[in-house]
Image (cartoon, rainbow, N blue to C red; front, side, top):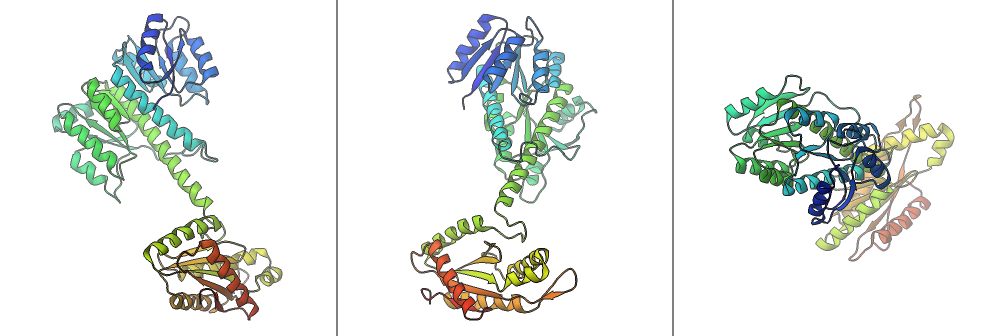
Length: 448
């Protein structure tokens, strides 16, 4: 994964050397010697990530970072602080200001490249989802506090890490182990919001646990941080899916800051995924009845048809249309008509099997797909549907009742039948059902 990177350093040699090292990975690099030049370059060239020194000749790097985080256009721009001032206080201040990571000068190249890959991937995922209509501000509200699980391979070491984390951390922290984490990652379980793994002294086991958590469905999207003893392991952890990698001697303040940021990102990403799921669901759902809509029905019908041809099994398409529905609207109004449609949709739904397709594809028209149904079975199912609709009138909100019936046209698959041809056959059969008196099932002559 390559990107456009901005290197901000007041020493020309540092800029040139770092650009040369990054060029080997095919990253495009921009250079800036001071804070104001960096801000102008970000505005004009829109880099994907910034490598920022803290000591700049005009304004401090923390001020550059603060301005980026205050601007909605650059609020989520990944920033790695690369500095000679690498003490606990400087690191904590950088993370508090919104840095994504802090690395010493000169940075370890494999670790830097791994971190860049992680941050660019995270940014691309967020941008892709936010670009969809209505999802740019999803997940602005979260359940708080979150649950952080601290997983170690030695109880004494885990207690020591827990003891370093300040009580001001606005999240619940619990000690756990590998088995408990993997049990929580099984389907149906509720995993923690974030996981902190202490790899000290058990590097291989920690990397194996990270891989297991990322492969488990329930924990695949959980935020995972690793306490790592060296740069080589840190780079590997990022490439295996860790969101954050901290030095084993990280201060409690840094751990708390990075866990809090991790939980916020994890909750935001979860909200965006949920919003995307709802977005897709709504795009394929009829809002009045809650049934699938025409778009979904045509796609699903094509899938069912391919499966039927491949397995050699029968397949049927039914078009069901409410009889004299215009008279319902004319006599009772469109609100009552909508209530009738919703009620009939429910009755149709009650007649469907688990693998059957049911969709509202027009005003009062419904499409039904019956996989693995013979012609006789499909015709019998269609008659049951007619009976279920006509069995009792629909009671309106004002207490009045409306008698409703439905006519059904049925088409049965033949080898090589195309979905659109079957719909056309069912439509012709439906027209015959209407002209022959309604409230009946007519099988397409081609299917008979």
